Length: 317
Image (tube, rainbow, N blue to C red; front, side, top):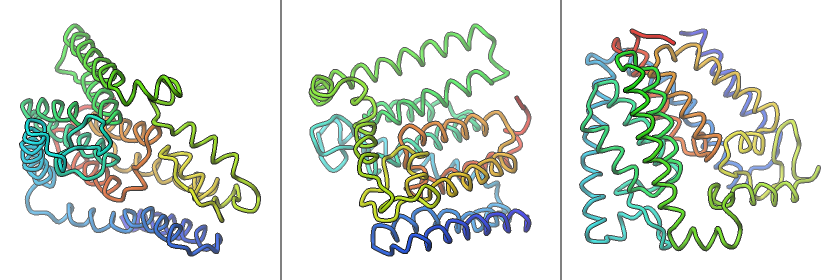
């Protein structure tokens, strides 16, 4: 364990060294650095907390998510039926109800974590409830994450025969495609599609913003090794590009090593592999895993819970 903590400390020091080399201590850059570093500093505390927990850590986390999902579902349905603005995901005329979840960027990771734990404890009612409120969120990242996670969980579920898997995957695909088509036929998305095309609508202008930012980059505001120096925009909500933007090639290499070691140390079961793969895939397409500290913290919590839960360690790929 202490060897792993040394590696983690080394990674934190590497990111800190890169940040200091920028010699830019504006609010934007300091805030970005803190967002990246905070979950890494919290990770040892989470590890020791779950290691010394008297009750099963996975059970505690399951109960926490159960209470939150039930409460938030009630608020979402109230918001939907009475059109309560404070419970809406967006405030710009786009459909979506998120209850008390304030950030749509964090939403996919929360529902992803909840669904994973409900699957571990075979709580079909809560899985169904989570899928329903995921659809009501109106967030494309939530649709993608739930579809990919459930598809992987079904594929590697040894208790299901091939026919059951095919039927479940087909149903999941129909629901996923139906939600996307329904979303793209709303007035707001129709306007975007007519003006800028379907690709822009799918990625919510991320590709357009990427091209614009690349045109702004020069040797005066960006260094390929350590990232942004004077750029006024350092996040595109595409995780790999975000890392390269702020920490450069050195930072990207550091993160690749970090996630590889995280996978080797904590990811053992089918369920944890499905969760880990979905989390990283989601972050590549929509970002916010590392930018929102609570998203990273949730990933750590679920991986630790899955690692120590006996039911999830029975099967391997």
